[in-house]
Length: 363
Image (cartoon, rainbow, N blue to C red; front, side, top):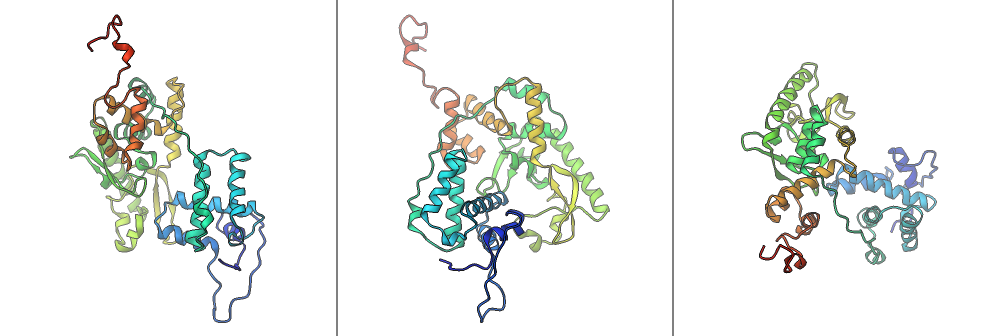
């Protein structure tokens, strides 16, 4: 356990844009045999997260929870805190913060990561902490007619993206992060790379989306050519591939399938890049389309994925096939859609419907 720190953790996070403004800190003298100060806590958190290939969203979420934990306990260093402080923080989130069980569990995971992986402290009391029980909820599913009504209210790129959410069962970010090389029109399939859990899978490419995708690829090619003509045309590459293949980030194959309308200058390399279309653009378009279609269900972009799975099961496809198309690791995750159908996989029928005189005997 660390007995001293170079900087207050809140002040460190404030320097990263995730802390509290005006936080005060003290610096201890360096040991005689060191010429540089020890790594800041926030740097150690980021280093440990990137070593384990956490997504950027996970990094941001964990930093946020650690910051809130430190602020909750008067900006004291986590190494000086114990089980009582962790329990008090988690209880505060549930009782006064009113957070959901899944949010409380995310905060617990962030603190587990902090102590085990960053501070290198294996505290037995962390193993015994009970996780909040997440209630089982049925997903919202649209009927086929409702899906058609929503799509009819959409135009342009958001309509094509929503078509892929429903027709391919993609998650929102999986769709936004598609690249030109991930589209295989000849084989009618999409390759989803770095999906949930940093896994790859093959997804359906709907026939209805083939020609719109062909036109979208042509537009991306024209935009990329214009970007290159003015010295831009770069995109971000995953896992440090830009160091292994220095020119790949400017090739057409790596361009985003749904590029943003604006470019930006990357601070480290100085290159002018183009990001993918922000997910909020599609979220807003879907929300507006739901309202225009007069659909009162509490639906979102993810509802298209739920509808994709449910409609495949209604069409008689087996649960294992649906599991593979969705990219679920555990079959029990896919089984939730059998409950949405109102029947089991085998089409269980109530025995009362087979009683004599009900007109259903023998079915």
